View 1 (cartoon, rainbow, N blue to C red):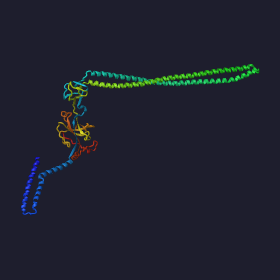
View 2 (cartoon, rainbow, N blue to C red; view 1 turned 120 degrees about the horizontal axis):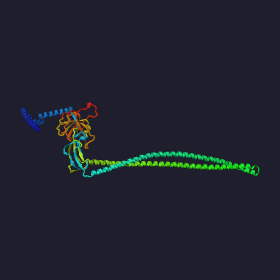
View 3 (spheres, rainbow, N blue to C red; view 1 turned 90 degrees about the vertical axis):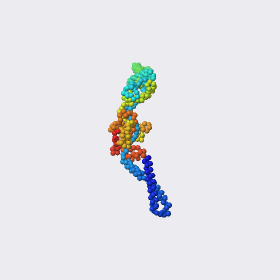
Length: 514
């Protein structure tokens, strides 16, 4: 400001001197000219005023020199923008964490509802503990609660044993019934075969009896056919005897033949009756034997059906017992979990580390299940940095991309475009990028130390939770391109991961050691 005021004062001084000299020159010129025409005299003051105004509008020599310097600098800047390289980067911020999830800070919660009755020796804020060290003891508000849980556990165990015994018994019944089904099925098949054999045999007996009846009936018919002829012969001879034409002996012989034929008819009739009676007996025997065989078949089939029914009943009993067993086992697991939680009244350190943020007060605070008691920060040297980048830049970040990190409390100067001139920053490389955001459009990028560069500060200075700024280095482009990209709001230019053309890839310059 003082310089500008000085330049303005110098400019006004020079203008006044110039006007004075111009006025003196014009007056001397007017005097030396002698006589002016009367026609030109009215125009003389206007000409002088115009020349004075032109001199007032002219810039000073210093101003013109400064303008030339600015113009040359602008041209040089434009030329530099054409050739000077620029390292594109994606900026993010985050904090230091342990690389292994099990080595990050963990909150110890109350496993049961109760009150803290005792703290471990030497347990206080920022106290160092080792794995398995006693931290605190929690006691339930109900002193008999543990005993009741144990009784319920025993009852549930007995229910499980009873259900298993029912399943075992049902399985044995099922197997026995299955064996009986096979036995009765074979027995029924045997009885059916016996019935077929009996039926065939009895049919043969009946057929034989029918043939015998037919035979004696034919014999009876033959014997009966001879009687009329003998009777006629006897009557004829009897008439002749009465007339005394023939001897008595002849009549007697014919009568004897007639009586013999009648005797044979009576015998044949008796044989027919006997054969028919025998046929009826054979038929009755056949029906009796077939009926008895069918009774055996029906009995065996009834036993078979009963065995099948026993199998179905055993299956139902087994399924019911299995359902009861599953329910009892679920209750048993729940009771065992409750008993285990209830018996876990002693809290111990799960790992080596430091106790921080102790929440409840001794003996006064009533805890619910899951309430935080304290936090343990593990001791680890395997550190990483999680930085959060916007969703616009997340697709540009890939594994093994170089990163420059600036830690809180560690003085550093970082030029995003020229990482080679950065001071106080540390190198890293991208390990992974989360597949989803944090609910606010930010994606987490996990960064580990770069083994080829200077190691990070010790854990004395670089503790978990220390904030950090990160610059994920992408690709070298001309400076004019970066300016043009910023003006248009385009994303940075990156080389595709699967690009195999090494000539198109540009490696980030190795930054100096911090």
